[in-house]
Image (cartoon, rainbow, N blue to C red; front, side, top):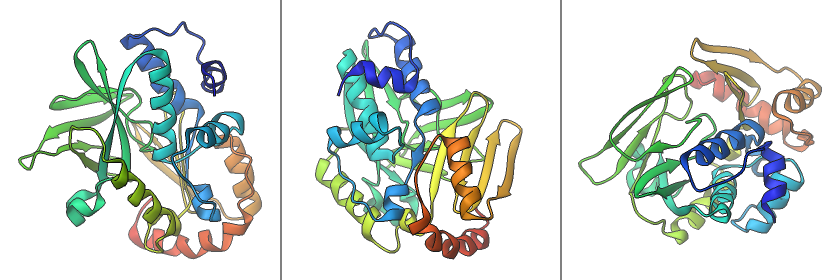
Length: 270
């Protein structure tokens, strides 16, 4: 594990320093060049928090990952540069099932000169750049995000209007690592987990967010959403390579992707 290889992977060519310019650039470049994806969960390959494994997968093998891997790698890189990083537990769609969901999303707090920032390259279709942990709205590339402190002590991040993941809640405190580990295990093994029921791949470009949910591909921009269907396994392999930079054989998961497709359409998602 070394920063030089990580910088090459995300095509970062600046001189890193513990400042907002570096922070913004690393966050954005990570999203531009490392896709969010759950292909290993679809293939039944077990995932954990081991940074050596995550580095080999996302950097050496040119793959992507889900929040535990994406933000795990970003947190390591920022700490190596010298940033003050704290892991925190998020709860995607916590409103529906309350605290049971807390820990199903890993996020990062970065303390920069006494100001607290939220860093998150693990939501897939969220912010491009870090945002301060203060109440208010933030517009990036024509999409608007909000942070608000709730009466129960949780903060709520509301995603942009075209997102699939509408919001997550978090307590502004260090993560309970056991909670993260328990949710990580559940999400990759329980039949009701959305990561088991559907292929999810997402990546940022200069002006868009590209989203693959099952067979449905959506391009999100400030102008709205454009959706099309990827009809065959051969076309999907070509699409994953050309759009997301992923050269992975997903044929063992194709039947599951086809089965999930109808449910995705019925939910009106994508």
